[in-house]
Image 1 (spheres, helix red, strand yellow):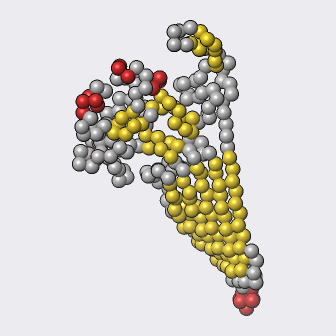
Image 2 (cartoon, rainbow, N blue to C red):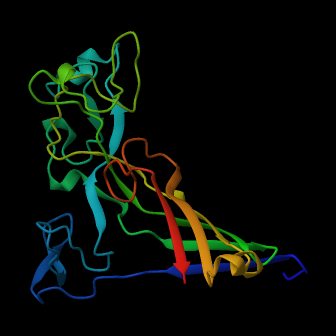
Image 3 (cartoon, helix red, strand yellow):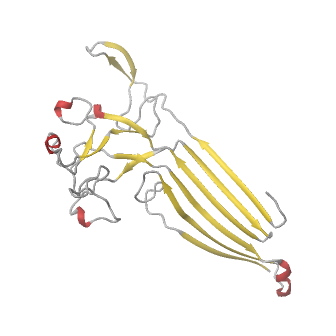
Length: 258
């Protein structure tokens, strides 16, 4: 859009990224029916690395999180050696054993975003003042969230404000302090989709008619701020993209041409 003292330019980008493991090591195993008879064969998956034929290379394969054992569920929790406030995972295979194994694990999505988009806008006023705004998003990927505060004296080691289960403040999203997780490696998997207001920049070119009397050919002033805001679907702690606390940064600049 162009007017006499106003110009607006927009750019939009959209990308998809899909992958699938077709082959690994070309080693095969038998397929058995319920009676133990061989009815076929298939290429062997690599469970150690979490690689499965026909799946995304970043597929999450883990226990299905079902919440937290609550007051009133003491008897059932005790069968797994747990108490209210401990995490609960779906027991699929051999329920009577009350133990978790690889047979209880399921596919829970991928850590790879399903799609990414960017949206940039540049506004120019009076041909001298330019404002740029950039937004981008990664959507459809999942990841694990720390929902158990563990370790020695967990009530004394919280770096960020951490939520946790108590009898007076029950929740299905966070375990009690020092909770016991009998499903070794079991995690709470949540959506890590986000939209980030990544950058706002302002630039002003001082008119040359004003600079002539000072024998200056050009003067440009600029300022900007990065990582202004990040809106997430479910993620709460740290940064969903970089996995840590990302600071807001400011910059100022002067460009002088003599």
